[in-house]
Image (cartoon, rainbow, N blue to C red; front, top):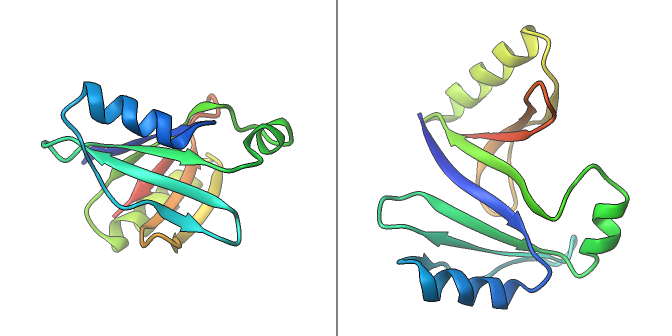
Length: 128
């Protein structure tokens, strides 16, 4: 297993992207945009493969005010290597009494993942 990426909610997506690209040795993907949620993001990758996901919604302040989400780091992701392992680990976590926030699924940007909560409410994406 490995940490796949760390996600950061941001108010100014382009400014944050410029900051990370200017000060760290990162490469950016093309901007992802989901028109239904008005969600946009960039993945910034280190040579090692670890990544930072910068995320934005125009209503981020409202969205954060109505949920348990916080500006900054909303989750981190751990890659387990396959869809089957995502499913298996999700069920193991569930059977041990921990909360499943998002059932295993393929996301709009192509990830197969589930989302779980640790004992203190930190969100973890389990990805293939």
